[in-house]
Length: 370
Ligand code: UD1
Ligand code: UDP
Image 1 (cartoon, rainbow, N blue to C red):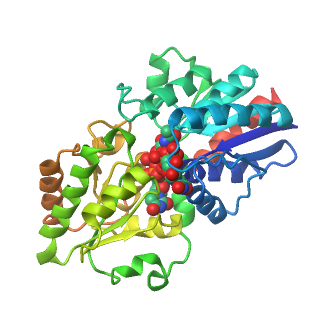
Image 2: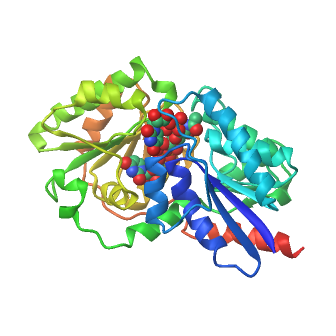
């Protein structure tokens, strides 16, 4: 019996690790699966785990309001070290590039435990963008012993860094597994928070939270959204913006967009509601990593308000457009899309086929048998 400790901290890790943890649970004869929540996010992570029917075996509750990176990192090292001493895992798994993941990988390394990096090999090549995630994922890939690369491109990036072929497994991105599972659930628009917009009304969905934009660039981004709302009046277009709980996001969003009659500022959406918002939006404006990977499934165009992306596959497929953080460019691109044809619906997703979690767990089972 092998013990696999899966460590999650933030909302996207919850969403992308949920299918893996569910799959680990399907092999109780061979794997003991332990789910650890660091609580780097509190409300936003709880929401997701509940939705997937997952209950952490260990809850660390580390989030502090407006936490600094260094303080969070220090707390994570202490707390995860204690968990590893107690659980004595054969494997530690974590997904992505947050502070939780970076620390999990280094703690695994210190204890000489195999670290499996889910969503390995994403790169922008610029340590400032996204900040601090580009550094986090590189550290995780220095410490890892198994690399679950979502795409051919991420697998190639790892090979180019000298990672041996046998350690790289191209699996697809688990976000597609999560998305397909949740999109199949029944949904009632009228009783969801999306009902602030009458069903069938065209809307632009917005999400934003990147640290490298905080301050004036983020305010410019909010002003761009305001202009998009203003210019969409004739077409009856609304803006739906579920606002991230980071106080550096909430303050400028409220100040610049609050009270506008066609801009609906919502609390973070449950993933079930979010998936329907993604599916039914006329256009998506975002700086999120996960949203770039999800939207192509529904054929809804995405404008990415960043200067670089570690997910170029969507851009190459024509589903995602990098528009940067410049206000006039965001507005011009949004207006062009809103006056173009209505999105045609479901499309092939370049990030995965919905079976990534099975592939990841089959690698662990194979290695356990060796
Ligand atoms: C974090 C990750 C980022 C990821 C994002 C996903 C790091 C450095 N950043 O950014 O990579 O893309 O999550 O959303 O790991 N807060 C709450 N409740 C919550 C969540 C957050 O109140 O449920 C507030 C708290 O005041 C907290 C602050 O948001 O201190 C910032 O949270 P933190 O996890 O440090 O950074 P994010 O910006 O959320
Ligand atoms: N998401 C959600 N509710 C929201 C906003 C986002 O469930 O109100 C989901 C979104 O669909 C995606 C994930 O959260 O799966 C992305 O999280 P975020 O943008 O916070 O982080 P990133 O992906 O940029 O790391």
